[in-house]
Image 1 (tube, protein in one colour):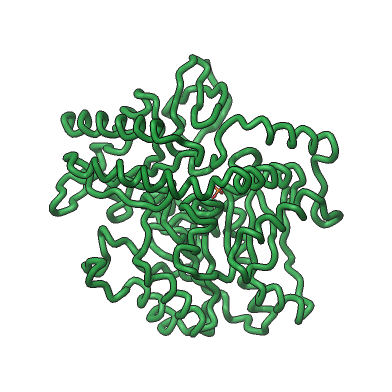
Image 2: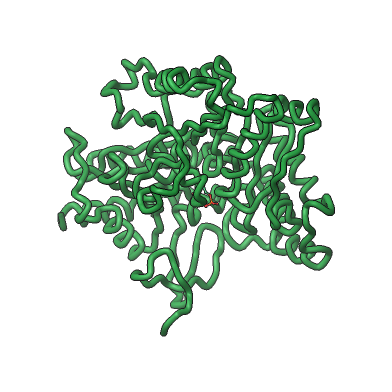
Length: 441
Ligand SMILES: Cc1ncc(COP(=O)(O)O)c(C=O)c1O
């Protein structure tokens, strides 16, 4: 059968999904999959929650769409309050979009508009990190640092400066966490000085790097130091919390692990747990005030920004997240996942396991002592996916881990409602598949 859909990968045929229930997905053939990655780190409260469907039906019947330039709407107002309640104290307002990439573009425009309002129009340059991912639009691809996702479009990307990632397993400065001078944070200071702080608007980073590295957190001193550097140079700190937000790492937001308050936070994914396309930009009070004091506008809105139906979904999801104490559950189940993953450390092809809460990663290497990655043509992460999917478990795979080109990993980020027995099932499938792949290689 020819399906008239232009997909991401034309040459791989995918099963057709039938339904979702809790941590499980079922395809049309009746095969059951344990969704060990919540799609792409999206589904926090589990699939098929009837309470959310009921609220969506009610909202669609009442009013599904208004444009944000004509009306405010109650679901968006309610959701903004819920988001602010979970966020660091100084975050004071929320701008809604339809997903993470739109969020990144919005945050960039907001940063530039903020400096325009403050009569610093030269502050337009952006600094980000290699091995990061901030979305698929041209601006988001420009600040992203994943070689494979950038190189095709290289000639039309924005001119952004990338600094090395805080990636301790492969420290760009050949240090160890025990003997670390946080050179990767110092690189931000040096870069701002070299380019001139009068030209720099913002530094953007994921608190814990998700899809491109597989749950890589920095040393504890990193983000407090980055905050200090940004303050010293009057540069905004944009935290991309699209993956880490809303409890994924066992705290409401990734930056909460270090008590750091960003100036702008980008969120998506978990805010609606996939029940509707939704993202949100959280704005710190001093930015809000700069716009108010200078009567400045923000000439930016998407047709589906502040969408009542999406906001109703987000609001219902956050109600469940709080009522069922699922952020705490993400922390508890995350500790169990971490402990079980560590038991796999001795398997021949596993180089590193890492993460926080229910955001964990596994990196594969050819040689555990040198950390040498496998050649690209060995397709290790794809082999791992195939083997695990055939056992009914879905991980979120990635490549280019080691240097943008070589390297294999996957991310595990199941729904927060997962049980210990279901985590055991994931571990068992990794164990069996890794042994099988090691033998094939
Ligand atoms: C950290 C991060 N930022 C931004 C995005 C882009 O979000 P979306 O795919 O919803 O546009 C992603 C998606 O994976 C992400 O992981």
